[in-house]
Length: 117
Image (tube, one colour):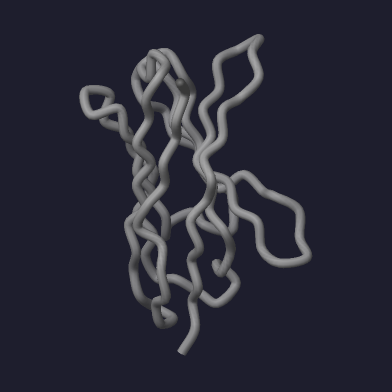
């Protein structure tokens, strides 16, 4: 059974940091491109960051470049999103995504991130 379980969300003040984790099971994690998406109220889901395989090349949305860092630990089957200098506009539900070319992606259930004073 495929599972992607996100954790680490919460309420943080502007300028603060959070680290999201996504634990994977039920598939060969190291084969998959892993990404974080987010969806704010009333907006479409958007791609935040991606880490590829092999070599772990990373890509980021312009809105988070220089503030967010995506990483993966294939031994732990986990992908992380370190979020620094958070802004109110970063408030959203953050989703973990696993993609293998030619197949439907897997999604986690999401974790809420709220940036507010």
